[in-house]
Length: 72
Image (cartoon, rainbow, N blue to C red):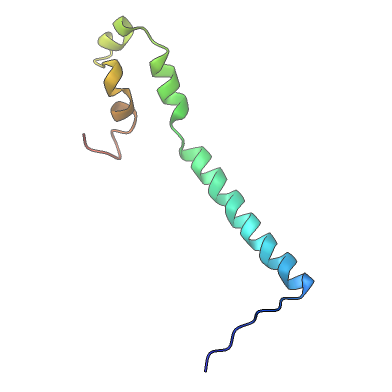
C-alpha cells in the first residue's frame, strides 16, 4: 500500500519552496558561468577582415566558440 502526503503544513511548504529556490538559483548561476554569449558577441562585433585574419567566417562563429563541446 502506497502512502503519500498531500497536506503540507505551512512550515513544510516554506521549507520545500526554499529548497527548490536554492536549487534553481544554483542552476541559474551555473548556466550563467557556462554561458558563451559574451564570446559570441565579441566575435560578431569584429569586421569580416578581422575574422578572416583569425581564420574564421561569420557563419562559423558559434561552432568556433563551442568547438570544445561540439564537433561540426
